[in-house]
Image (cartoon, rainbow, N blue to C red):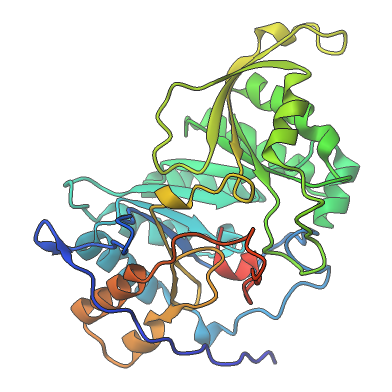
Length: 366
């Protein structure tokens, strides 16, 4: 039987000011959170080397996780009282939550401060997604991000410790066929592991009409798997891409989006004679070398009901404990807004005193 130490209790920051007559998730630097990341489970059916050890982790006991009703209640407060306009469901692996479609349906039944349903998105490893898609789309799911770090079956097996690449490719095709555009593919690039996949992944995504997003590896996995001086940077990723593509910065305004977008067009090569016909958008998320903290518009809810202001935060505020103690919706909204009011200006990865969060990515939510 697994056990877990109780979460530390943190004092919420002073209440934030009201904006346009309503409380919003604003911080002292003027950033307003409109995007909510909801982790529905800390469990995963892969064991990616950059995320967790081969044996997995000590999973959260069921009684400490939010129930469906508690999750929906907090999403409702975020949308109807705090100005959230987009909800992304993450994990662990969110497809492992059997009630995923019900939670999405309850979310899309809400109305934002603009009078429309909140946009919904799913970040997934894709395993089994093709079978779940009809129900998820009926529930109102708008977009999907699928993780794909390599197209090589053996390399995928080594990276994830599971031989499931074919299932991921099936999920990608099913999502494209379902019309959930743009379908986004997330690729974490690691030194000496999958740098050779950069160009093949780009060719694959462009040929499918999907939008590939390369991601700098972040210090959110096992502590011995990341070193700042060894990581593959955004500039190095672009160097690889320029060996096969003409790249120009996209005209679209980036806003609070994490990815810097590039318009890519393939050049004909001996290995890909039809390559010059491939063109589209490729994104690069440079969380470490080019942080975008100044434009961050996110708030995060963990599986066990804690509010996190940043992926790399060293503190969090438990709404679960307050909710189970009888707090009203207004009280929960006030604590949530107070926590976000105290959001730090940046993640500080390049600071000499940076400390990796105690929670790993699977326990925070992507």
